[in-house]
Image (cartoon, rainbow, N blue to C red; front, side):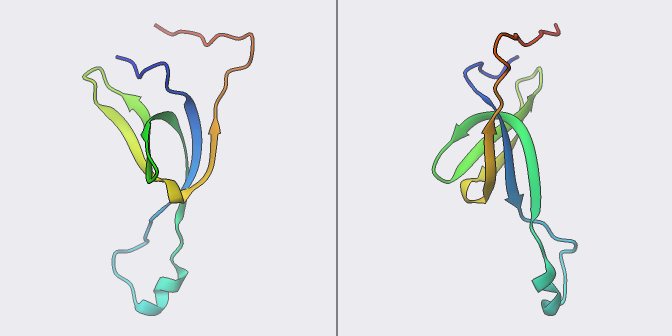
Length: 91
């Protein structure tokens, strides 16, 4: 049970749709703001329209993920381990 090692761990900050309520008066809609999310995970697939960011995998092979619209990405950074330091394995 492992995501492929070739996938680089990334930190992505992005806008997502949100609502305080599913119903509102029209004049209240101008106050609606998007949520800003910050997530860490492995980019397991992407194209010109969306990024699939996996953030967990179960022993049965199911993957927890976000499908992030590319147009909503505010910041995207690779997380690179410090040189000379190996990641510790906890098995």
